Length: 150
Image (cartoon, rainbow, N blue to C red):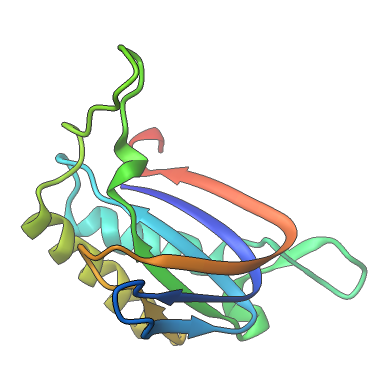
């Protein structure tokens, strides 16, 4: 699994077809989550735990020493199969390493539920829908995590 997390002051997702907001948070993390063909439920659970415990929020002296849990922040999780784009050949990305939709949705849900079970408020995008994501990046702080690299 791959996740690009961004520390935010606020973030929201709307569906352009309707203008409806599907998820919105204040201070916390925006997580763009990609699921690969080789990923498992264990990967989803471990990655969720890592994201909530990663110390990327500042403490009282300005050092990144607090986690999402420590600051009482929320997480907005948006599915993002394009994180598995392979652009090494030609000009059109290949997405063969992205999990098929049924598997991706299942592991996306495991990721979201694990975060909830850790006591973090979670909002989501709309799986397999075109979405507009708005955010106020705080820092900016952006971190990339890939379970295959651990």
